[in-house]
Length: 143
Image 1 (cartoon, rainbow, N blue to C red):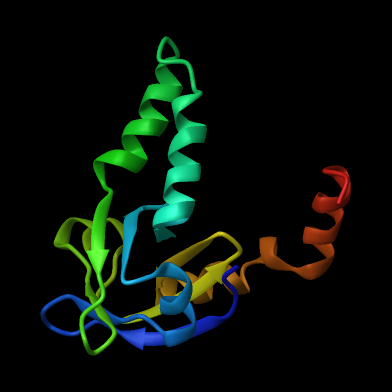
Image 2: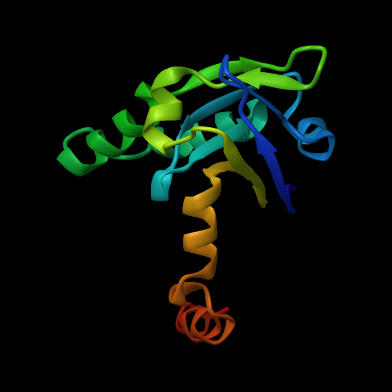
């Protein structure tokens, strides 16, 4: 399980350090792909296999389901951690998430998210993240 919030920078070559606590859960090789909310999602090999199996149950006859599957798989790539604990974030994924220099790496249960610092601070400080409003929404979901 992943949790926590870590601030790092992307170097000029597009590499970012993955915090050791996160790295331990992801493994030496993991999957990085486009995420929702204009961030990147990272999955361990096991979690990616679970996610992939759920996506395979979606009906190919449904246009939205096909688009959803394409969204995650077209941007997906296997990342390998180097000896300094860094990964290379491909240019297309950096552009998608607007990653330039400062980033936040956050643990979100079964996945890790990589956010542009400004986007994360805006999202995290946004009105939709107020504890009271989130609690009300979760109550409607039965949590």
